[in-house]
Image 1 (cartoon, rainbow, N blue to C red):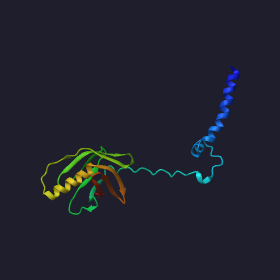
Image 2: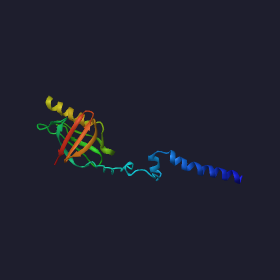
Image 3: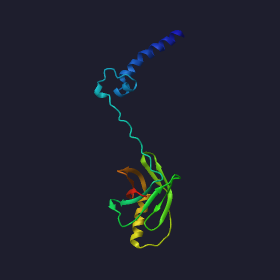
Image 4: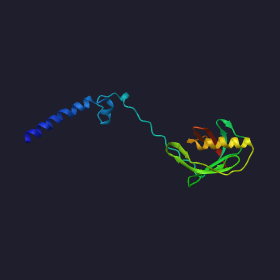
Amino acid sequence: MTNRRLGYAALLAALVPMASLIAGPAEAQRRGGGRGAPQEQQQQIPPAEQEKSFPVGASWAASSLNGKPISDRRATFLIDANLRGTGFGGCNTFSAAAYPLRQQGLAVGPLALTKRTCDKGLLDFERAFLTALRAARKWDLVDGKLVVQGAAGELRFDRGL
């Protein structure tokens, strides 16, 4: 029985160096080997970019919708500490659950909306604004502006009062 164990140990000892020869450069580097590997092959991993925090509690005023400036309309958006999104769409006020997610994702739930009547142009603008907001999937802060992007377009907001 002792001879058999010694035989297995000798076989294992003979196979281990072979495994490091068969493994590719990445595997050898991971194991701490990399003997004889040129310095050029060892790649530096760039430091991870720090994730941004959504500005909860900040009020935002819409400045453009799908690249077109909004100068004659007023629309606002705010996510409070309870993750409730509220604002004004141009004619009606709205509220919805709004969750800033990891990797600058954004989820906006179904909207609750008041039922004021306004002229057709204002209602069309409000519909486009709320559709873009509801379809939002990503957010970013660029030059002090909040940028919200999704399947229905892009909204840009200036910091409100």
